Image 1 (tube, rainbow, N blue to C red):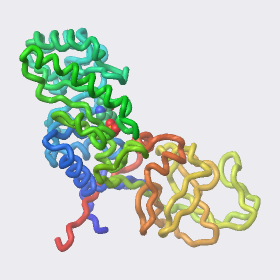
Image 2 (image 1 turned 180 degrees about the horizontal axis):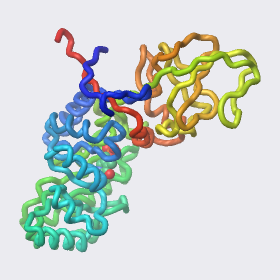
Image 3 (image 1 turned 45 degrees about the vertical axis):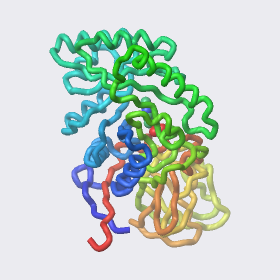
Image 4 (image 1 turned 30 degrees about the vertical axis):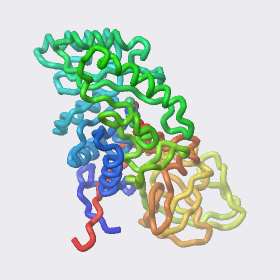
Amino acid sequence: MAFNESTISNNGIVRPTYIEVNLTRLTENYRAIERAVAPAKMMPILKANAYGHGLVEVARHVVSLGAAYLGVAFLEEGILLREMGISAPILVLGGIIGNQVPLFLKHDLTLTASSIEKLTQINEAAAEMGVRARVHLKIDTGMERIGVHYYNADSLLEAALNCEHCLVEGIYSHFANADTAVLQSAQIQLDRFNQVLSFYEQRGLPLPPLRHMANSGAILQLPGSHFDMVRAGILLYGVYPSDEVAKTIAARPVLSWKSRVVYFKVVLPDHPVSYGSTWQSDHMVRVVTVPVGYGDGYFRRMSGQAQVIIRGKRYPVIGRICMDQLMVNLEWDSAYNNDEVTLLGESDGQIIRCEELAEWAGTIPYEILTNINTRVSRIYLTEKKQGA
Ligand SMILES: *Cc1c(COP(=O)(O)O)cnc(C)c1O
């Protein structure tokens, strides 16, 4: 595969441990989802440093692809995007805390209103500042996280009709179980949301223009939940939300995690490797050291299970994973200083998937991606077109 290097973060200084973000793949995944959900619009979800892929770079890229809206978890993420010159609409999905409302308004960030009190607070702040607040109402249909309960939602919808200083442009809910094989509970949540939406029809009122509910699981499995917009998270990054989910849309991983061999040595029999001396060999082996560790988000829990790819072959990580380094057993194969080490992603026909790391660490792919530390450089690549 040929690449154009478009951007190197950290002022061009690249630590030997880095993430490659394949923007061509990101585009392909984006278009595949877009085709599957049309005419619903796209809201790429960029929380947690865009699932580890880099908040600002991914935001710029999806805006260039035509994303209608961007979704982040926290106010700070929204402000950073504004400061970096992103002018697309941005919805902050999380709850509002303390006196944050004026900051939302100052940066033209869309607020999630999850109770009448919050809505009133937003309306009053907007009146005071002489602006119109963009608001999406949040309905809890079964997640029990934030949002007004579906069985109490009418009062919030009613109150929203009288907020002169708010532009209620959206209403949304969130699934607790859209990535499972059995969709009974998701269907119940969807029914509840539709019931809440009937408020408008019953009163002959226009619906808020952006109804949205679908995360990746529901994008794949519940077309009836696509409404006016979908909130595409992990699927956009080419990872499926669970093993059980129906893979109705083809998506390929965007992120690879690489490092390099910094040290080579021979280890004698009965000479244990790393903290706690948990691993030793009964014969001579060649061992290389790689400058990556749990301080980068390569979980210590994976000690004794993880593998990496060097020169097209998988080798086991041995002994405890350290904060900044780990050791790999080559048995009697060869490797040299500066050889590429693939921790996650493809190399010479081999592949290590995010799901595999998740299994070694006893977690889910989401946690693997979002824990890759910011001290790991991100490099953004686009594949060269054939013949270009
Ligand atoms: C994180 C999140 C999403 C995206 O979820 P994925 O499973 O990654 O697609 C969508 N909506 C809300 C409210 C979220 O918090």
